[in-house]
Image 1 (tube, rainbow, N blue to C red):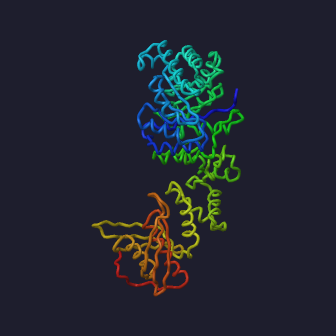
Image 2: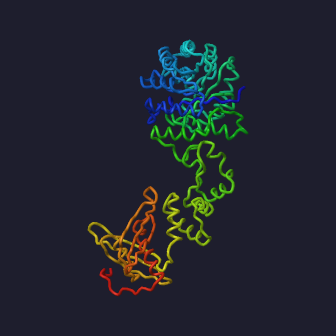
Image 3: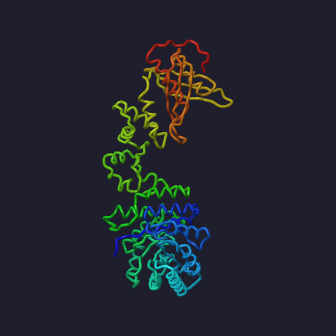
Length: 515
């Protein structure tokens, strides 16, 4: 038996028909061309009888996409099969994929037919499809809940009628891996002509077992897996193509199989689907999720930096990413922090690194994720600043459209704590006047600018001020997730540059009254 597993991608059929994932013809063609680059074996392009749009999409993909076999879905109804062929005939390699339900629950409530009648329909449909193409796939819908003896009877009959692939779907995601694998093994042992066809599986994910069931099926003799990019599909979706392929690639010691998928195209294909549909995968999605190759825990980061395989079983490069991502947050350790600074070209001595790391940890308790721009501001604000004659200990402001803006400031000078308050035209102005009252260093604000260092509501705000002290223009910078605090730090930074190099007499009287 061949050890190659055929990858049958049904993103454009089963995936696309799920709520929220509809695509127009142009989008389907773009997606199909990327699937061809990914080198899947079969692209199920749609269900031609379903709508005029689906028919045109399948036809255009058949005409324009080279490489993979192009398949179209049809019921075992003659008009369905004819319509599928009208769309598929333009492909160099084409496949008619026809199906009928075989479970008693479907026969009784949906088809309202008996077993013999459904068997006849299946044989008739396969024989009709065979008139058009040698590549005919038959699916026994709801196979998992079908009587196994009846299922084997149907499969044997359709193979005799010309089916070259027989698909065993877990249509409602009901199976568990052991059970599904046993079913595939039973089919191999009891369908006398099974060697004339490839066993395929199509697993849904209602219990979260679609990938596990697919792999169990391969271990028991299936050689085609029907799956979708990002696992999209009806209800909870289908087996995720990227998970099946990478499981086979990574666990060759346990799964001695191969696929022809170019795995370095996986991430690009996943992102394209997200872009087209506007629906992103969850961050913790295996293989392609935002966090799949991201590490925040300090222990994990330390391990990855020392030896990647301590916490990564595959390389990000293997799916088309450039590298792993060390997410800096409150769980991160000093090793990851210093490594990121090093990557940014920032060199600090031990004392500077210690100070910056303390500031980083405080910020990480406020922000969920620390970005490179945040780190640059931390270093600049905490390390590359003037000697702190005055250090901000406390700030509280009150403002409103019917409230007098007030700021209460507490500064530390040496071991002395000084507190005062000020009022102004706004909270920033009040803050600056309170600082002036405490330090006794009068300054004239020449310019004030603020920018968000990163995106998001918790972004760091960086404030830059230019202040004139007795004609000397001094620049001050400050940063914080709180804009008023950043403003206070910037002004105080400018004050410290002056206070650190000259003695300034305290102003005895200021226009702003004490509060």
